[in-house]
Length: 349
Image (cartoon, rainbow, N blue to C red; front, side, top):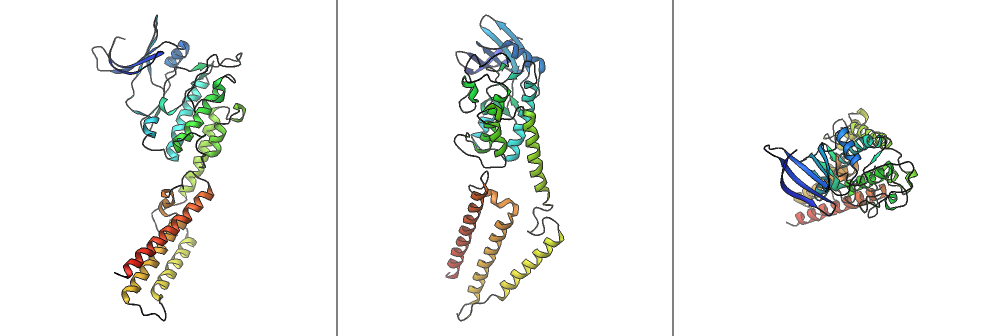
């Protein structure tokens, strides 16, 4: 393929990556010129043509190294997106699950293909589909080898064995994938932040220091993730009418009866509310009732988590139960106090 160079994307002593256009056509591609490489892996990737890995159009070896023409993807990397926000639990689950499917194909090859550099910078994401790229330091697993011949990998994401302790295998990719999962949810590495969300058990197993303590293949991760999010989905499905008033969301008769009795009791208290032995104007009674109504609404919102209001509290998401309870109580008290202050100010207008 004859191409015209448009722009240099990255250039180091070991590789040169450029944006190119096919001569006499408008098709745009990525051209990689590698000094160090494993030609066998690139040829295998071209042959497999896996969904979720940029399509490879041509591979050519010359005296300067290996030249690869591959698909150009006009979307952001996960690193670009993380500069702006973290991912929701569901988004992170979908991304990790897709990567597991891609890695499963690579890990099933004979010999196994190990990526060894799974990190946000090496994954494109268009909002639905992920694309794993940059196989520059990928290698094949060898049964008769004790450790890798070269120490390579990205700090924070690379498994301990990538630094010369053991030979890397598919569990090394699982370690990096676990770190990535943690970063998607928190924008921090596991060594800098202790995740307390629903995914903690799975991530902790993925990033175990000892490879024997990790998941032994990505199919196990998919199984546990699907089970976890199926349970979460079932929990959400119990709420038939999420926007209905508390007590009426599940559609259960006994809950609706209790809710009606509770609402009627509050209305009765509101109407019969009086302050004895103290002269109070009708306006002041009106303000007192406003304060009571605000307290009732705030308490109802927090106690029933109406419209997932607790998820918007600081330090609530991705933390343990103790932190969540403390955050809820403190936020509830602060809002009660603010409503009291506002009511007091109104009283003297």
